[in-house]
Every structure is written in C-alpha cells, then in structure tokens.
Image (cartoon, rainbow, N blue to C red; front, side, top):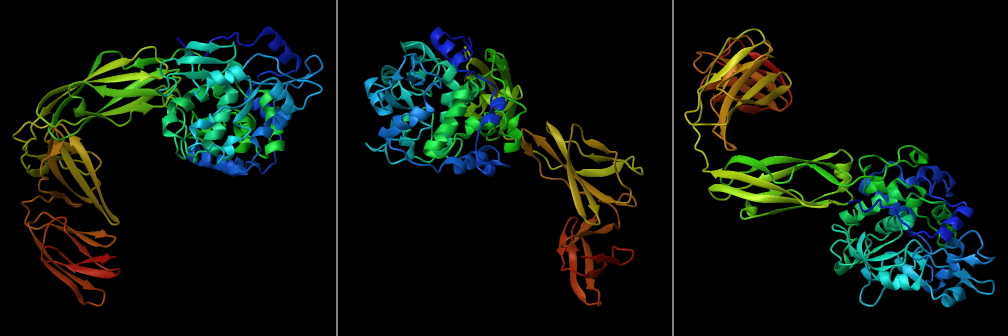
Length: 585
C-alpha cells in the first residue's frame, strides 16, 4: 500500500471554493518562481555549490534576520497568514491545522482576535526539541516566522511535540490534522506522529528544510532526535528528509507560500529559499546532490517528479542464498549484492542476524531512498570475515523504505585454514616475436585459485608495472614493444593470500635474456637515478659524472636495484656492458 499518494477529503467544499475564488492554486514550483521578489545579489552565494556546501551557503544567505517578539507574532501574521479575500466582509486567518473559520473582526486587533478565537502560536519544529533546561528563548528559532504559524488550539494540543509522519491509526483527526500511530518506517522511533493535510505537507517540508539549514548548530535534544541531529550535514535524519522531499514533490510551492515569503521578509528580514527555489532541497538531500546549483538555472527545467507507485524491491528476492565460497580464517571475502527497486519513500534499513552474524559485516546500515530511486539500483558490499574454521551462515534483513514487508537473504561461507604456498620459478618465455611472447613459470604443486603475473616495462622516463590474473601457468603478451625492455615475475593466489614473488625474467629490447644468460644488463632511467635490469645474479657498475670523476662504484647489484643520483649527466660502465651508457638525470 502506498501512503504518500492517497486521495484526501481533508479540504472541505466551502474551503476549496473559497481558495478557488481567491485564485490560489497549487502550481509547479518552477512556474511560480518568477513571481518571487528578492534582491539580485541575495542568493549569489549559492552559485557553484552542491550538497553540504550548498546547505552551508543557504544558511549564510538567510540566517541573519530580525528577532521578533513571540507574543507579537499575530501582529505580523495579519500580513502573512490571512486569506487575501474577505469572509462575510471580514479578514479570515489562514491556519494550516484545521478547517475552522477564525476571523479578525472589524473591531479587533490581530492580537485580540487571537485571544478571542483561542488560537495558538505553533512551532512546526517543536521548541522542546532544542530546549535547554527550561530555556527555549536563547535562539531566534523560538520566534522565527519560518517555524511558527497560527494554529487551531485543539489541533495544536493534539500534535504536541510529536514528529511529522504518516498516520496509520489516528487518535485525533479533524479532517486536516491527524495524530496517531505511524505507518511502519515513519516517525524515527516515535510511537505517535503528526500528519498535516496533503495540501500543506509541502509547506511544512519547506519549513523543516529551512530549520535544518539555519539552526543546524542549536542544541537538538537527543531524547527528541526523531527527525533532527546536531550536525552541519545532513542535520535531518535520513528517513525524515526522504519523507519531506516526497511531500515537497507532491505539494509544490503554492501562491500562498510565495505571497507569505514576501510578507515574512518585510517583517523579519529574510526569505525561505526553499520557497523561492522548489528544487533546492533536491540539490542538498535528494536526487540532484551530484549536480551544482546555479540560481539562473532555477527559472525552469527539470522538476523532480513525486513517487506515484508502491515501494518495490525486485532484487534480491526473498529467501535467496548468497554464497561467499571459501575464505581463509582471518581473511576477508567480499560480495556485492545488487539492490534493485523503485518508489521508496524512506531509507532502506539493513540488519544481519543469526548464529554467525559476527562473521559478516555491512558497510552501511541504511540506504537513502534517493540513492536507489534515482538509478534503480544500489551495489551493497557485504564482507565475510571468519575467525574460526567451518561453515557459517547468517541472515540479511532488508526493511523500511515504505516496503509492506521485509525481505530476507541467506548468507553462507566456509572458512578454510590459511594456505601454505610454494615460491614459483619464472621460466624462459617462448614464442618470442616482434610484438608478442608467452611468459611461462612452474605450476604450483598445491591447489591455487589463480596466478598473478607482474609485468614491468622500462621506458626512458620511468617504468610501468601491470598485474595480470592468469588461470594457468603461462600467459601470452600481445602488445610487446620490441624497442622497450621488460621483465616478469609471478605469484600464486589461494583464498586471498599470495605466495612469495618468484625470480624475475628479463625480456630485453633486442631479444630475451633469462636467468641463465652469460651477460645481460640494461640501465633504466628514473627521475631520481637509475634502475638495474639484469638476468645475472649480481652485476658491478661504476658511475662517472660529466667531468670524469667517479660518482660511485657498486660491486653487487641485483635485478631491480636502484641507485639514487642528483641531477646531471652520468656515464655508466660495467664488465657486463658492451659499451658505456650515457644517462641524463
């Protein structure tokens, strides 16, 4: 069952007619953005930012504002939170918690009307969530108009300090506000949640986005951390921002919010950028976090569509098995599980349980809905880390995300003893041609998973080594350059362990020189000196500078040894060289 896309009868016929008469309707946010009025430089700091840096830029743009008096809020609300048309010739409060008609009568001030109607000043993000002791006024959030709205008294009392969510079983329902037990996966662990009417879910989402940016560093109380956590990013809990993003997609910015944005700026001195830019939240928490935000791009273009179908996990299927195979005790075996699905409305939660659960490890316990919804899949790595011999099993549970039921995946692996591997012997290559040859080596006497061939090529400006997995004890090189010397050595691999690396065989630029050759020596250039390439057990070289002075003598160099030299021109001589070699460092 889908919970975020149900039809609703929460708007009374009279109220709906009234809103149509005022010409206030819900439109796509990008079509309305052109009506917003703000200074050209107001949002310039948002350009070129994305994700957490964009969130920080939002805070810098709007955090400075006038701190209003809490009791004076109705005086300001009479310009921002009233219907633009008269009701029987009198002004009507526009509150988002009920369908009641609350008037500012012709002989009343805004504050006296508030008292007469027994209305209340309601924090959309409850003040108890940041209260320190009995003090809630230490932060401007206490009277920030982007967090407070006029409210029906009974609805305000019913919603209390509960988090937003989707109500499955209501204990309070006035056809606009619902309070009750949440749908599975919503509420962040709270037993009761508050669900606003569908027509206002986007309004509340954009208020929460604003609060998560401007007040990310206030003392969010851990006992009320259902939706917020004290952090510069993401500040909102994953399940919370996923739900709020969905609400914002379904309930796009209305003309009511646009007019309120201008009115609040006149009273308080700042705007809500999530009203001015309906896609902004997607760049910070949603499907567009990999994109860079530019104000100029927000006048039109792509709008993130709402989720319109039921959450669905198509892979893995329930009760399937994933086999890690054989892994050595103390080793690590990693398998990637491809999660495929769509229409997730909250983060997917992951848990490993069972007798051998401590042998398996997850890199994450939660996957945001947007990470799967945007591409349709997610690669989940799972590690098998056995600490004792034998077969091990566990169970992966995938739940939340709006799924009607959990999906279970069986995990199994077998731990083997750490293998003992023999050092191999690299052999002469065969079938040597201008651009190819076949590297050969002795077969391992014990069972192995594969061989690793280390191929090193020596260029004038340095060397390059490749590692090649080989199923048998030979491998044909097909891209040899006959003008470039190269060498190869080999190891065997079993259960993630490698044998000691073998001897090295040199394939000279002019041909082949193996470990049995009488004379074979190549001097390779390095940025900081030279490298010795030889098929002899040891070689002797002398190094002279350009003036003929001996810069060094080395009597027992082996293949692969390096000699560090300062910048300059050097002459290398050796009994193993047919003629001296000139090297420029």
